[in-house]
Image (cartoon, rainbow, N blue to C red):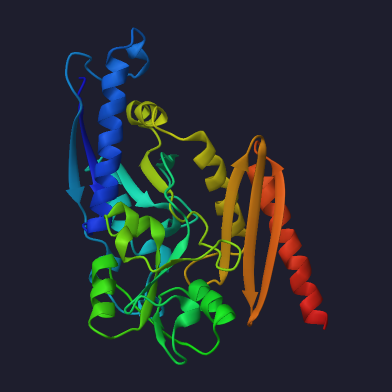
Length: 322
């Protein structure tokens, strides 16, 4: 029986809900456009006469409940913290698809599920939000900067080795409150998150992607569904961004090679210019920052990522011999 109802699984944070709402809007808009097309039958399983009905279902994850430092949470990896419960509901057919931040996604997808769609990428840069409006170079010596990422910690200390790094957890609003309450002099966040929740005005400074390289996949939305759900897969294909998908494949491959998570000091960023994929990456080996750039054909993102990883590993071996 045909049904036009779709249930989207999402975490309950303001950012997660904003991202799910954005995907909901994109799907409804695209579906309405497709209904006017004579070839609508290509999107199987939907009733053309009826509008698309989308419901958001909030799912609480382990990462939402346990706000301790990632390293102190047993029985899971950092990247499992925000997806495992959502994936379970999808495998049990309680939701039809889920919206995730790609950088929170584990490398391995559970059997039966598929990372099917990458509809958009927001600004992938990291930003500084300071209490007094000072940029990083203007902060006083021994200023306390909050981050929960070893990559961000290493990049900060590479630029300012006279500041103090203090761990921070929680959603965007929780972190901003801790800053405003005086627990930190500044914090580092993703520009994408602040922009998606309408808090771009809180940004003090944007870091360029050479001196402060983002996490692989930062700013990319990932929509996950069941592998055998052709109805949903066909609909998601209509909002997929091909260039973002290429960036995703390259950056995820780079991360996979280095087994990257929040506790692996790597970064990666890509752009596509004409037919070329330009990829840059960073690995911080015991305080020694290695930064490399490569480019390759956009049709071969994984090979380009492997080339970048090889360049970094060659430099790492040189450092070990010194």
